[in-house]
Image 1 (cartoon, chains in turn orange, blue):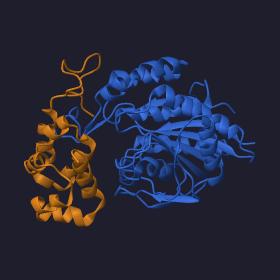
Image 2 (cartoon, each protein chain N blue to C red; image 1 turned 90 degrees about the vertical axis):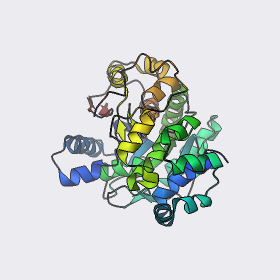
Image 3 (cartoon, helix red, strand yellow; image 1 turned 90 degrees about the horizontal axis):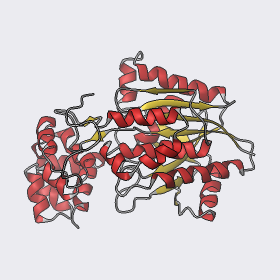
Length: 105
Length: 272
């Protein structure tokens, strides 16, 4: 089942310690526990979180992966790739609101 | 009969308990202490809490739009949030009455009878009733997984719950608590450089605060479209918890409303 399996993997990395350790030790093997398409496996292994987001994967759940640098996703790498995602919902950009891309805490 | 005695709103930032443990002078600790004082002053027996699960209590195999927790107790947090674990007493009778009244009034509420809660309920609990000073009635609102409920529906849900509370035969004093942010992006494309989260839409935060202070609930419901809440971040839907709370307490303006820099606010509504 597309997308759902990625969500389930991300959630399990937080809540299931055995899954987390397996993802650290053998990401490719651990992915077999989840119903992922070949494309999803490829993008996860490459840490392509922006592309996964474009397909409809939750950024909130994907960001769990940075807690343990899974799939090579340190926070700076994650941010670069996620911020480069193209938002299909607003092809002309974010209108009528302050730009989140520059906003700091 | 049960009475509604106050409305409250605050964030549930998962880092807040550990931040405050290291630095008790942190401003949000004081703001939460104020909320706790108000709950004590109105002698609340029950805190009915609108909050949103973050795929921990529920998952996308079965994710309710609105759910009522009906049990003698719950516990949490269930999501690795660095904070103490709590056993949380639930007012089972009032929760069951709200569930039943909702169904009878056309709200197709989900029911959960064996559940734990994540930081969305546990963080407020940590600050307002860590020793079980009140009982909770947890109301889960989907603020996080599109499609979101409509703002009008969340407000109507609150109005229905207000009626249900007022027809509950026990003499209970019920404070209504809304937990969540107005603008917050976690892990999505609107995050700032080298951060896991950020505030994408500060103008929207200012607009919400203005409308809350000026009897603007109807404008707020009109403007809080799914589109606008999403532009305010993937947690922007948490505004729905506040809109539902306002539906319960009616057309009041807050006695205090303190917006903070991270896209959320602390608010208190009192009338007695």
